[in-house]
Image (cartoon, rainbow, N blue to C red; front, side, top):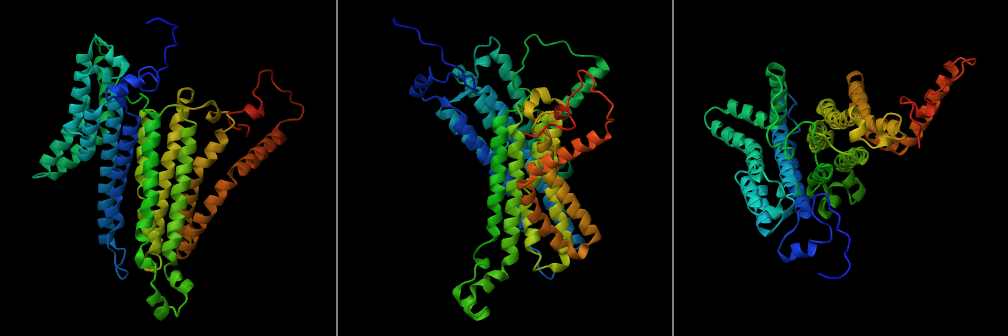
Length: 476
């Protein structure tokens, strides 16, 4: 064609051109996979989170003691919930890896992806997605599309993605006659990437490193240090938080909203008194919703400063989300204070434990990111950065508050309900004043260091200023 040349369009995150080829792709029925991936992440987050409903709806009558039989029943259901949650997140991780290979979709791939959502373990539709995408290479990511070894890539990818579904199928078979093997296989599905990494490390120690393959397959591996898609980690996590916050309202239904007849007969026409009878349910709902919202806020702030998510960070995020998914159980326990006051101590401790683990794994994500801070963190959140101390305080607030509340119940068990409600009220106010409190604490520490420093001592040339000290990062 004649005429002036236009600049070559830039590539987006999937490797597809952002302007030049979009019209051609749309004409051929080809589209980018962003919206489909968002839909898939939402579906998987819902599937993972609703697993908590059988736990929260465990029937315990007001007269029934929170004895060993009830504890065993809840412990069994919680263990099943955690295992199923982790298995769904393994399926989500496999889906994430798969669409690092597939860059674009057409109608057939979109329908195959819907079939994957229905089967969760992705067997056999995941293999069909891979076979279909390699049959039409223009749907692949550019690195694979232009590779001379696409057959090797296809064999390698199929071998990886079929391991998990094959183990799930084997577990289903063993469950018919010897279920302990099923539990072992399901646990293997969860920890398979880490077992593979550990086995490779042991093999390298025993027999030496392997010879590099003739054709290096660097894409679509389960290397523990390979970054995940930060955007998809955020999307999946946001879905879990949103669904957990929504599930809390399910138990506030027509049973907690009195009709006009009950108001007249039981409460002498006083609507305030009628609503007050369900006050513990409403109070527990607002407290639990605030907890979910603030944990999401801490998670959002954390990933705002993260450049890329490594595999260990992804595992810690999954564990944090698993306990976040248990917050409806904490709501159920705290809303039952009025019905079962004799069990309120155990209920408070269960709720504190769930909040503690949900938040401590968030703190562990940040700690893991600090180990490779140049690659994983923005400069402002690194040691010595202006946001370092603020992020530390934000992520440590809920672990400290829940642990303190749990410890107080061990000493002041009769005031356990009041202690828990004080924690629910105090933490949101602490979040509002957190930046001011951090600045005051840093100023006090600098003042103490200034008093401890000899007045005759002169600064050493090249020494780090207090404002840039890793221990005392300057507030913004």
